[in-house]
Every structure is written in C-alpha cells, then in structure tokens.
Image 1 (tube, rainbow, N blue to C red):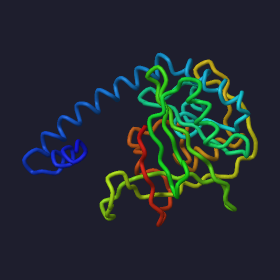
Image 2: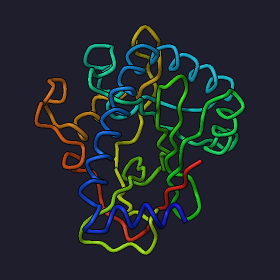
Image 3: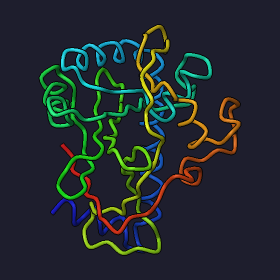
Image 4: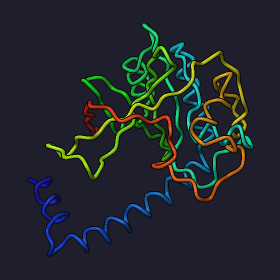
Length: 231
C-alpha cells in the first residue's frame, strides 16, 4: 500500500515535481551526513572491517574510488560518500560467509543487488559509515563484477528490477598493502592497471569533469536483469 502511494506521488503530474524537490533535499542531506561520517570515522570502521575479514581469512581489496584515494594521497577522496571493496570468493569465505560475519559483528545490512539469485553487490553501514562490497568473478580475460543501473531505453516490470552491466578488470597479479588514513590495507599488486582502466591514463590527477556513469569503458551491458533487495 505504501509503495503504491509513493509510486503515485512520484509519477502523477499533480505531485511529481514537488516529490522530486523533496527527494532532492533529503538526498543532499543524506550525502552530507555520509561524507562527514566517512571523514570522521572512516579509518576506524575500515580497521574494524579488516579485522572481521582477517578472522574469516577472506580475500579482499580496496576498489574503485577508495583505492584511487589511497594511491593518490593515502586518504579518502574529499567528496566521497562511502568505501568500496572487492571480494574474491573462496570456498570457505564467499559472500554469504562475509555477510554472516558482518551481521554477527554488528554491522547494519542495508541492501543487496542480486543476479540469478546470487549476491553480486551488498551495502553495509557502521557508525554512519557506508561501504559496498563487489563480488569478483574470474573470467578468461580478467576479473568481472556486476553493476546495476536503470536506462531510459529499457523497460522494467518491477520497481526493484535493474539492467546489469559487467565491469571488467585485469587479472590480479598478487597483493600488496597500502596506507589509507593510517590503516594498512590490501590492494591488488597491479592496482595501477585497474585505475587506468577505470579512470584513464592520467588517473593520478583529479579530473573535475569526471562522472562515474560515463567513465567506465570496461562496462558491458548484459541481457541479465538484477534485483535490489533492501534489508
């Protein structure tokens, strides 16, 4: 019932402009709070997350903008809202084991994105600090993980249905540690190759015109559909 009312408010010509303005105000406030939490408590949550993963013997790495900030100046990117991690699943430490361990440690499970009934990405929060875990799949040409979007040229039968893209990355050649906000954490030994692929050859220099949506040449749209599940 509530979902139906919200859908009507969002789509009716009588209310959609007001709904969008109110949504934008709420979203901007949430972004300010998320950035402040990452700045003040990100290092503490990162260290705690690493302890959970170490006890589980899970293979994980910094990913995307979190890895970019670590390589540039060993800090979180100033405008970032969350942390990003890769998980390379192992038989004894796959994504379900990681989810169970995080829940047991008191982390709040916010949502999953699933493909074919399996978690491909999950989002968590602790002390106001948000982070996403992307599950890597090994392919002949490298590692891939799924990303989720809604495109104007596609139709969707459910509110929480999404198009799926496969974001490709190189094979991981090994592991090394790097200082991020005073915490030594793992990144791929060839992390610079990941950054070149995602952010271009000049990735070390911040680009004010960069947009996440248009700057993933490695992203390939799939015929699969993904589903958002909130907890």
